[in-house]
Image (cartoon, rainbow, N blue to C red; front, side, top):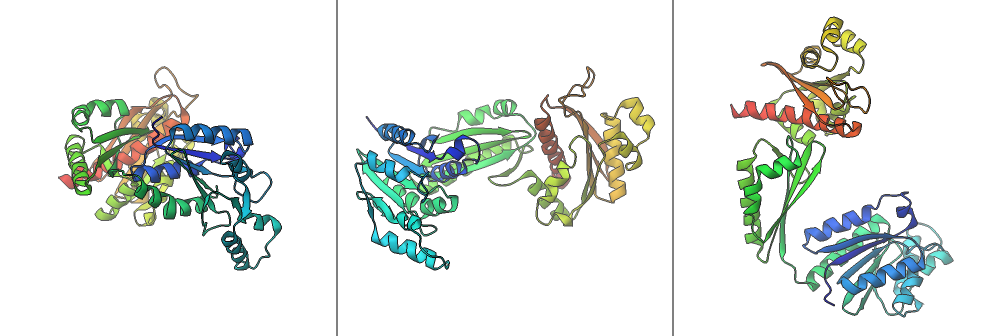
Length: 419
């Protein structure tokens, strides 16, 4: 059978019962993908001999490389090394170099070497030992029936060090892989299906060497573009051409790339312009303010917020007449406009944004169902509000509202710059 790709196996009962999140696998997959090393499967299994033996044996039938993390600690519940010996017909022996490494490791920390810790120097007699500079348990490398196996500790910083300094360089040189040019384009303001329809012709003309993935989340869609070619310059140039063509089709929807955030992009625009922002929030309960102030340096442009969750606060703090709220309802264009207008005046900011809506799952009506949200925006040029209908899930509705409000700020500033 032809073998290809990589299987990533995480060992640990704590993963299966939800006690910890399996961040190791996602980190490994990301780094391998960036080197154009293809991943077949990500698997989580229990700290049990049968599960370990069965999973590793099955992966060895189809995968070219099997990466395993977890179960290499010094306590009795860590059984990976003993199970590995049964899989590869090995016996555990003391590796003198590892033993000295463990001794020095504890000496530098002013601690005595215990029997349990010295047992970290026990390794299968037929494996290649890869030293773990960040810890005591070494990585173990086997090759059997044209499949490569690497067993690493599950401690994240130890695994990352081994992956970065040995696993990825070794297997990149061992395997002939094309160069991968990759960029993720970040969009906001249009749902996945509508976006796909808008860029359909562009997508259909990408070519066989290019792949596109849609990665949607509330309020935004990420477009991951991969170009694989043997020549780095050709791959980089082709990727840039795709991106340039995409900007011509959806310039208003793109707000950044890769690790950019909408709040970071908005903050940069405000700094460049020397302007300031304030918020009046009802249904978002301060989440917009939280996003804005999560950016370092936001004190240069963010002045404050009024979280007017109740009608009393809308009236007393934002000065919205109760008669307006009674006539039009707290979730209305009129209230959203006054919230934005008044908080801008109170805070003395260049811009302001407001939100009022029905996040759900209760509180809706036939005229204003759950998911109805008004977002207001005020500047020296005036004030406006726009109605949105997001859905019936509370958390999703608030996420959509936050992203849309931030995008409203971004689009207004960019539109002004283009004048």
